[in-house]
Image (cartoon, rainbow, N blue to C red; front, top):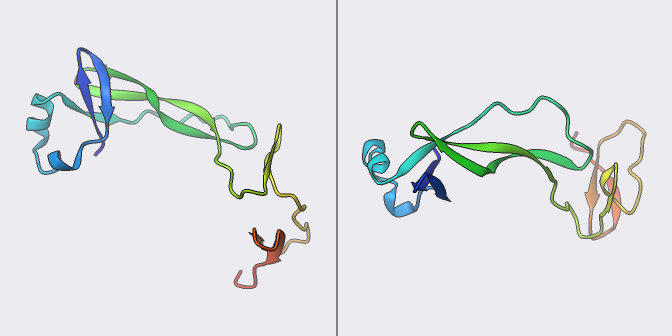
Length: 117
């Protein structure tokens, strides 16, 4: 369970420090640590190259902490890939469209057929 520190009705820290891991939930709550409750993930699709992430902005309510879902840009998968609006991260070489499985080889700067698939 993820916990968050609440001070003066504001979330000041998310993620329980290792030195508090052995404490009971009751004791942690007495110390101002509340459980983080997930909310339902949005059902609409994100734009290409983005994903839903849960977290900040945080709010505390009724002894629990809630985050918000935000659409965030995915991390760059390889140094050679460039961001293209409307497409996301794009390799410098187009991936073959022949129905076979491929993986990107950054050293060779090429798509390599995945013979394990």
